[in-house]
Length: 161
Image (tube, rainbow, N blue to C red; front, side, top):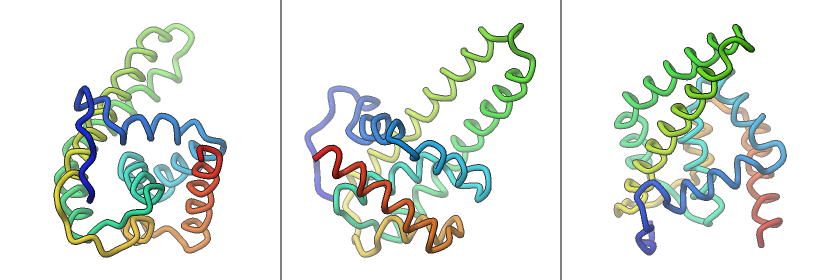
């Protein structure tokens, strides 16, 4: 990967900023959450693959494996907080404050996950595979799902640029 200027904070890196902006783009949130629910996909890894694709770069199988395995403990933690948040959410409105706290904590954990991916992004890897192809293979995304995802990224890029 090409080296980028160091962000002012490891948490406020270009991948995080891209993720916040891309996630708000029409149809991205439902697509990513559907991949999470139906395919067991890690949304942070999908955002990373989206970032790499939007930048016109490739990933290596090795970098994907390192990310997938190395971030598994954080992924389990995020999943636990998400399950707790959803459980608390069923008791709203009495639990609104606790629900919002869990939601903010889950977002902070995702920000930490993306910071770790950004750090990994700065390493030198033999870039040889399209990121969407790697993610699609990992999560069993059908070609039509990968094509939809590519379309969302292209629409985002066209709107930004």
